[in-house]
Image 1: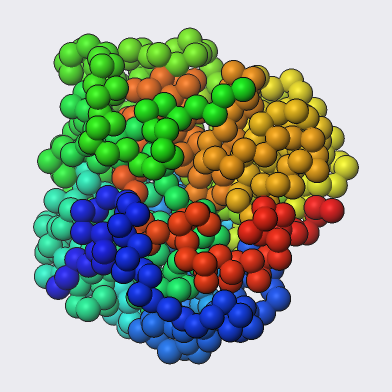
Image 2: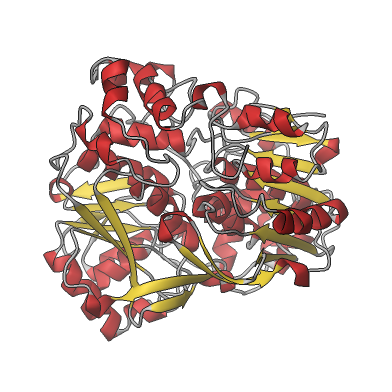
Length: 284
Length: 284
């Protein structure tokens, strides 16, 4: 039942002081680390050899990790593009994409995401990830809910980004569990028996349940998942490869920081947003 | 010839002090702002009415903005998923996707991005955006280069994310221009006559040329582009909707912050990375 933020309790990006804890972690000499790395193209492939290098993740280095990303019409590309960019780069990790009917899905804004598998064809996955969307009508339908429930019940890790947690919660698997959600929708979790926690990353049951906040929170979520399962070194390596050194030009990423005018604009577009109870198609 | 970072000169996320400059910008009462917004679903559509609301962007509120994202086999999803998530939400802004042959492209990790137009079918675009990839073989070929050069020469704004700047530079359009790039490849810009600037966002010629650093820098890049063209309010609104309030769990997003061991690991995988001269397929 913890919402862990190791060495970053403020929820703000670390300053130089954040290095101290990182610096106590040593995985051997540079030469030794170099020796375990193979010659595969870094940006193009995960690095299996990384699994050998001083791993502190909860999975054994050679344990395969199968991650299933649930796609649906109306979904938000960035909700899963952040996590997938990170997960694809982890050692011994396989990322699959599936939707109810397989094939292409029509994400919001007319974006077409292709070549998904059929959910019914997937017997089991170690981790299920449900991203959010601007229209949850499709994944809230009984046939989608049944597949998501089936796969979540047998998964070791049940995860979501953005309002994908509402989709998971509607299946019943988050009953009594703490979960994150996009700030505009978070209090709707209660309607499905889940416990809304307004943080960027939330875990429960020692990490069986892990969730990220809205859209871009998927990147922070995935780095935390990576560190937990594959070790901090694998997570830091991936963070460096994707140059995740954020420098937002404005202070407007959360209602606590945004100007009242901007919050009011969102609240006007999505009535109820500032109470975390915005309406969205597919949700009662 | 400026690399602007308004009120964020350190390149680090703003602290509370960053609010002062933002707070001098007032666009009228909350009620007045609310009144100009329409009833469209916020997450699903751009908000044309936003164009009316106290805009300070360099484009007139009703000027349409056409953005073309160049896709190719071997490209990196997150390089353009961040910007597209932001650009699709801007008022009077149309985002298109195109590749040499049209249809689906096979991004890295087997990700399939569908339904792109043919570059040759696009007569002109206001902005061209070239994202990066793990294999630049395809977009470095003469036929791709000719299309990118043609569209860039007539575009008002010539932009890139990650090592997409190498693709642009190879066409010759960045000769003598300052540009960003992923840290591991940035000094290769010189080989094409461009000027490497190791920042997360770089502009030149009063913003005709705008570029972002590696992968996730596309989000910061796009918010800056949004503010410049559509006004700060539109950018802040979008930042709030995508909950871009980053909280990276580690200090490992740039070689200046990452531990030497992690930098060495990347350098081993991508020889030359720590000098900004990593090799990549398609680049000599």
